[in-house]
Each structure stands twice: as C-alpha cells, then as structure tokens.
Image 1: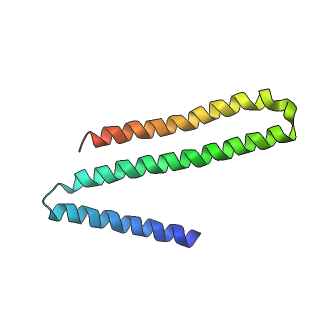
Image 2: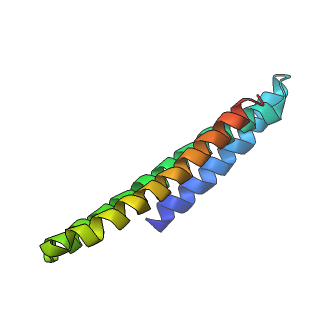
Image 3: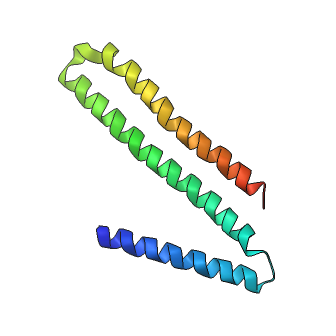
Length: 104
C-alpha cells in the first residue's frame, strides 16, 4: 500500500509539472491552470479526509453504544458536535476553492 501511495504522489507531481509547461506552451498563463488544479485537488483531499474521519468517528460511537446501550445520550451529542467540526473544515476548503476559482 505504501508503494502505491508513493507512486501516486510522484505521478501527481509529474502531472502538475507537465500541466504547467503545457499551459505555458499554449500562451496561457501557467498559474491560472495550476490554481484550478490546486483548488480541485484541495477540495477533493479535504472531502476524502473528512469522509474517512466521520466514518471512523461514527463507527467508534456505534461500537461503544453496542457494548453499552445505556450510554446513548452520553455518546450521541458529542459525536454529532464532532461531526459538525469535521464538516466545517470541508466547508472552509470549499470557500477557499471558490476564492481561488474566482482568481482564474
């Protein structure tokens, strides 16, 4: 799995380097294309990380409730607050992506 992640990271960096030079060859400003790619990648990574974090949080809460059903009211409220905090980070990433796409 680590080898696949390293290969994916290196191929992503190569793609970004080639995208900048291809845009510069067309006469377009290379920074505009890289801003668009960065906004899309940033939002995708934020959404993927939040989805994984929310999944782990809910799985842990459900496991705790399954072991002790009487603790539902002590687990559910902090879990929902934690999920809201995780989701707020994705909303911040969405706002940043909109701000960056306005500069294109």
